[in-house]
Each structure stands twice: as C-alpha cells, then as structure tokens.
Length: 135
Image (tube, rainbow, N blue to C red; front, top):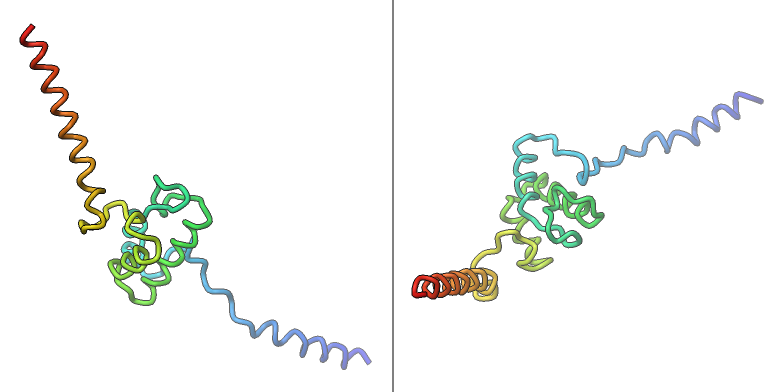
C-alpha cells in the first residue's frame, strides 16, 4: 500500500523537477562574458534614469532603472551593439534619456541655450569690469 503512494508522489514531483531554472535577473546580475558586461556597464553609465533624472541607470535604485539595466544587458547578450541599444532607448524614451544627446535640429536648444547663457554671463561680467575701471 505504501509503495504505490511513494510511486505516485515521485510521479507528481517529476514535472516540478523538470522545470528549468529561471534565467538570471540581468537587473542585478552581470553578464557572463566580461567584454559584453563592460559594454553594458559603459552604456548604463551614459543613460539617464527616468525617475531620478540626475542619476545614470547604473547607480539608481528605482524599479524602472532596474528594468532598463535588464533591457540593456539582455539586448547586449543577444548581440546588439551599445549604439543599437542606445538608439532603441532613445526611440522609446526620447533624446532626454541620454546624458550626451546627439546634435540635431530637435536637440539644438540643449546645446545652444547653455552656450548662450555663458556668453550672456561673460558679457555682463565684462560690462561690470569696464564700469569699475572707468570710475
């Protein structure tokens, strides 16, 4: 009587043993290939966290940053280049996601406004220095 129960329990447990282990959580686990992990880490340092806004996804604890790290590692593990992954992220989240957006018509204000502010500040300083020297 016990033997059939043991046999039935073993049969019931067999499908659970056949389930493959979960793939690694690439949000927290590095890629096995050191060269690919270096590419992923370098890319993650240049991508802005959408939640934290001032931090790269490599250093953010936000859940969305973890999802983005996972996406970066998965795509690089599949063979995408870092530029392909960056283009995909920019297409999904916009140019703002990159700490150094490419110069285009749409991103020109990102480059020109700081330069204009610097030029304006230098003009103000020069004007004040000229006023002081003429007194």
